[in-house]
Length: 250
Length: 94
Image (cartoon, rainbow over all chains, first blue to last red; front, side):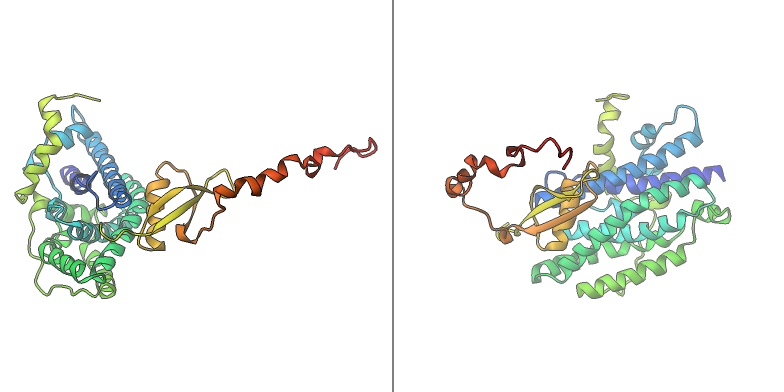
């Protein structure tokens, strides 16, 4: 049970950290200053969420484990994030669609987790939900804006859907630790989340004049440590400084 | 970008005040995006509770070149200030 809780906290934290890091790669490169700041704000929200989950996980583990050691001194196979969040930024369409797919999932997840039998997870979810509500609104509006925009923006959004769709199934495929915690009322059932997610997707895609792909979203593995090639490169950048100069501060 | 988004002026009401104060400007494609951009650019440090945006082209301003004729004539009209008038001692408060 305790191992499952630790893994689940890593999973929740890693999802937030890796997507936060991906978004932070846009810092200074956004299409316009205002959106550069918007995405950087989202990145900071997510990294803040990751910290809360890591702090809890570190307290659970005890000993020399800290939030920093969890972020900076674990290798690819120990990360529990889903594959979606580690996918490359691509163009703006890829970035906002990835955010929409994920925020839409996270919104219902955190809504449900507020009532988790684990009150600390419940408190983190309640706090983070306010942030996610905005992420969902922001990313959903961008999906509509690009989907229902010009010929080029629609083409780019369709390309993003083609590239990212296959990674959405994993969000609703419970890992062993999620199944274990479900029995204790700590994690939440995936099926209702999937229903909410699909309903919102249908509404936004309809507004954006985009089609939901018929293909199955088959890719998975990240939740149990089998990642795409990209995570190694992300960690190389994310962890470089602490690996080269352990314990350094600024 | 070849086609720039229009410019918007941003007004924020802080926790302390009742009035929305001009804080700056930004670019956005429409009003909804302007409010979100204002939230992201101007309220990052808890500056506000309410946001107004208005497209800059809708603001009509006085001409700085006319400042002399517009504003200088009021400089010597001290009788327009209430402090110009002496109150009779019988009047304690107004």
